[in-house]
Image (cartoon, rainbow, N blue to C red; front, side):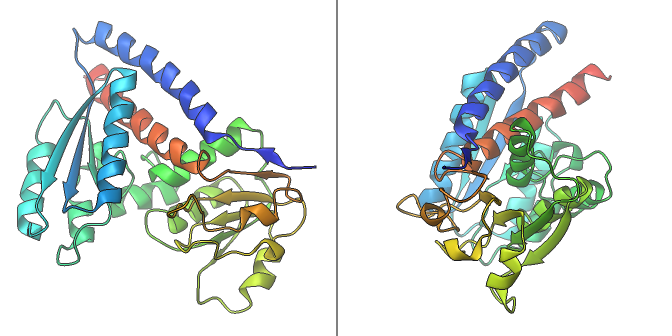
Length: 283
């Protein structure tokens, strides 16, 4: 019998309905103020441009504003930092997103960390990561935070569960591992160089594919009854996991597309609204 589909598209739509109501309520409480997500896109990567456009559309659907800043490929680190600094000081901007990846000549980490932590709604700063890892208040990286929300919605128990995260990126694999650990799972972090990777994955009751390589994790690596979360997306609608081989044996899985992706955007928008509420309602 096929596993339960963890339908991120459906949940994201439900979340957007709730966010729309909160936006209207916030406007009523603040004399019409509207939360604004500022997105910075450096270069002309078509996939990144698509992601930025999708985030802008999501803002529009819930009644928020999106300020899109497009910079040429030759933009320097200092020039990008100047744009971030201006957004940090703009009271109308409640969230800042620097679209990853930036061109290789730019110091991406330096630019990420220049984002004010209270506007770091994509959870990319070292400060935000550290607070999240220590269980303190912070905006978590949008993709792993979205995965956690999806697992919670479907009642997937995490306490005591053996989880394997395949991938160690600073905005996906590492924060995913910390969030699972904070939820009392027992977590192993692997990557493409891990020895005996198939054997380690077979021990998992929850597998998160976050390695960034199409169909890298094979179906026969995954134990029957495991929960399978595929955080990858590649041309042709392929994720990081060979999902077709596990649909009938796993207990639950995220489809590709329609699983993790919509939850990433919904979480980003939710955290932008939360940042506005914290800023405008506590003064």
